Length: 453
Image (tube, rainbow, N blue to C red; front, top):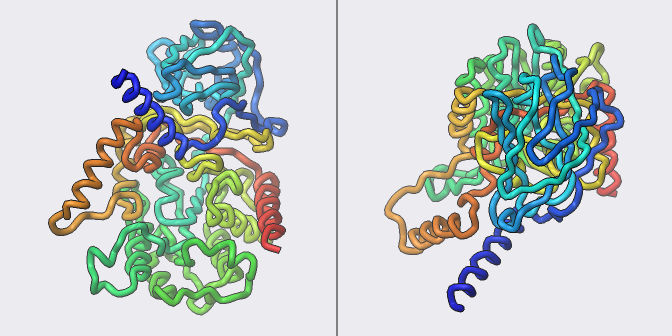
């Protein structure tokens, strides 16, 4: 009896811990708006063992299978997954615990094998069904001039490290990242204002870490605007937001780029647009990579895209296509689900309004995943702060409790860390035309403007 009570108590604790990370109803269908999709759609029959790909899959690089899934009893406490096998190709997709309903399964890695796909569920079940397969064919990058826009230091690496080997790629980082999670005062009490040191550390990160992927510092540009204030700046576009706790002009002077930023333009929304127009005019990118407004659940990310679109609006010849990324899931920061190295599928969405015009699932080979892991680890904000001195008994107890908790909850001590979430078998981008991206940005900005009034 006592053992049964102990087991039930552990399962309850496990569920509660997971629900703190995944708070939405996992029994709902996930729905998206594919009405404006540029892809091809097929109907496929799925049985208990798998399905057969249609003959027309040749030439497509991205595919998602929409099918209904259910979970076993164990799948409420353990991470459910679906393994897809075809010939010598194999990929795994993980879902949230307790999954039940329609989900999108990323089958992109096995599209190269035209034939029958075997399905093997772990803590997962499905019935024979008529499923919908959507396929996309994306243009190769070749001689594209790519501009990756990062709201903060590390966002470019999280979202698009696999692109960084491209020879015509530049990164522009909007914020200095002065909101560092480390307790710098504990490390060096005499270091002065924490924000100043944090901004200098993360500005250095944004200029040097891309060098690990071959992007020399002259191809990385740091604009050094204050972290977490883009929404305020947009609401008062002419107001000066020059920070008092770090050297705005001094950080901008660290840039090695040949593109000269204004030295006296101030720190305002208008000056941000001036910077972006200058950068875009000189680089003339044919492809811009930036956050997906609203569905990337960080205000700085949404307003980064608003700023880029406002800058593009006054320039001739905007790029024909843009790639949108999501680093902060709208419904949960725990997405993508499952361990590092597995495939990324679509983020959960329940209202059916999330527009999906195009998708590009770009594969990352194991070697590229290792390189991405090292780049993320080099970012100060993503790794844990070093511990100095001898730990107190309280700190030792906290560490032991945290390690025991990982076994009880089935979650890492930092369950939403980017070493799990971003080091994956693929990087996922939403493909949009310039008018589509502009419409998304305007809708997002109008929503927040109405909310602020």
